[in-house]
Length: 332
Picture 1 (cartoon, helix red, strand yellow):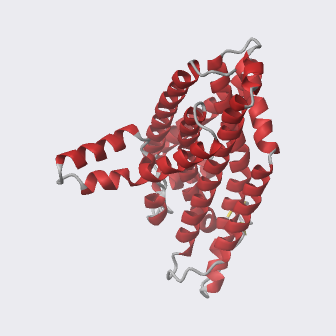
Picture 2 (cartoon, rainbow, N blue to C red):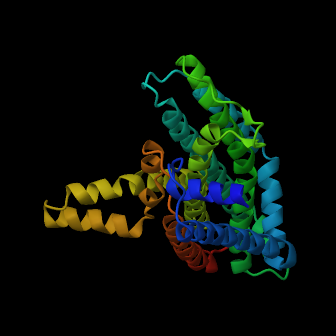
Picture 3 (cartoon, rainbow, N blue to C red):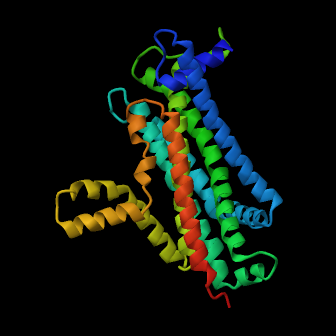
């Protein structure tokens, strides 16, 4: 039990404690992180329940199988792992900040891989099925259009989870190893790979891994939002337009806060357009992990919860827009 409290105190503070934190702070940390894990477990349980016990789940499982069987799935996984291996051993010449650079590059690699899979699957699984008249055959069964859209979206999320899981394990393992690798390269004392005395992972190696786990939830939320946007676009647009539009939205949504800030004192029409873009497009900067990585801090549970709520709200709005766009789409 003592080891568990020490572990949660590390999560709450983001650095090894100098003195024992008060019991109230430790209980608060236990409660907050336990709540985060509980919500994540509930969301995963809801996803699996819908996938295996509803008609929508039939479409979701079919979409997941289709996504994981296509060559792009394996290609993205292999390329992402190779790129993370290169980034792990690449000298950054940052005077001891190589771990931060690697975490930033690894998170970006996982983010781009997940978005590529989500957008590609939405395009091939929805727009091409509509154009190829496959959707009409499917909707002739006891499945309505809304179940079709929701099933496709949930199937894409499941495929993204199957892609991100091995990438996350590889990413965390490389961080754990790189702590010792960088110490050896800089002629510093190399932390033990495993603390045999206490029979637990070495905390000097484990702490950077713990700091990288909460940003992974933010990466997953950003992918989920972009997947919902891509699903909405794919109900009306073919593959090329969908991919172009999705990645344009991705870029513009990230720079929208900068545009608003720069144009806050400019011309009224320009400021109006900048604010309109910032409101209409998803606030992807909300999921930006660079600040947490650069400061070696762990994202607060409250911020994670807020990000998840925003992700669910915007994804829901995008799926509702997909309902409207798909409702009167001619499938014949």
